Image 1: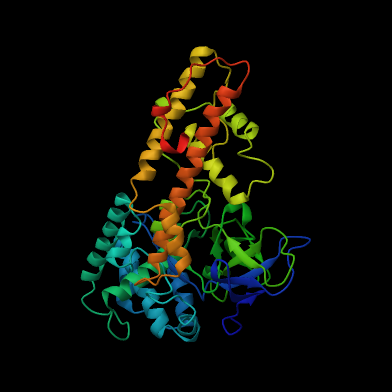
Image 2 (image 1 turned 180 degrees about the vertical axis):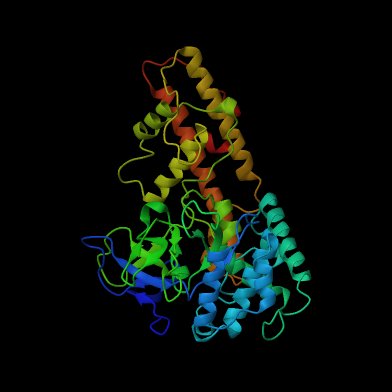
Length: 455
């Protein structure tokens, strides 16, 4: 990192999230502080998307040229492809640049290649998974999505009749690994001479070391990623936008991690949120992992069966389902369950009309809706080939899989089942709450109509 002019207060280590970045001292106690600063002339910065016909991509080309001056010249065939106004060509060029950089891109990237996860054991990705590992997700739509992505990479591979200046051969697995790295580690940003200029270009930024920070729920992050102009001692300019002002050469821009909250001890993990609003499905597609207690996840909930948010919240508090002692992971699942049951979109906290006073008919209708949702959720839970208990036993056994995706697939399906079980528990408490209210008169519920998890 010193040889690459990277300013750092972190080190590579291993914790409960696997390999990641850890602080070397207390930091951010009084103000936002810099954790890691990587000059852009060390970063791979490649245009993505179809590109504007009005843009000459001058700034993006200047960043590429600065990388070449510091490292090695990028093969012309890759650069030609990179600046086509075609998203497929640009994405392929970015993946090929990663392969070139890790094999012959100079001291920084060739050294950094030893830090990067290997193709099978270290990188959980749909693109690298064995076919049986895709089936292990026990989700037909996700398996179909994975096969679609793999087909696109194979199509790109067929477009590479020669190595484009990359030493050695380029196999389909090599290219899939490079695509997986770009998908899971690149930071999206805009570059341009000014915010409103026609030279603005969407780019993917691959920043050594910055991409080692692990993802957690947004409420627990310790750092934020930023890209901007720098004087070597911190960022200037707008968040997420590289304002080069003609100074990109010689370290005029950087990719940084800055503290989001005080880090009170050395060896604390530096964590970020890759996509604050991502569901576990989206995390699996892009990054090959899922979160325990992902508040953005949703259970199927037809509009005709939506429940009243105010009464549902009151019910789970009165019944003790949610208390001050509820573990954070479980509380996040409850957020997802309530949001699903009440038809709230991601990021929405309240319903637009939450008058939840009930007459006798309204009470019966609310109970019927809760039972209907329970039947839908119970149907999904029982559709899986394994139970949650069987999944947890598999995870505890330390089973080895063909690639790192195998374990991620079991974790993904297990977390879905935990969410479904949590949902059934909430609905059960909700129905019981109505029957326990002294001033509410309702007909006895038909026990045979209740899903198994709500009996």
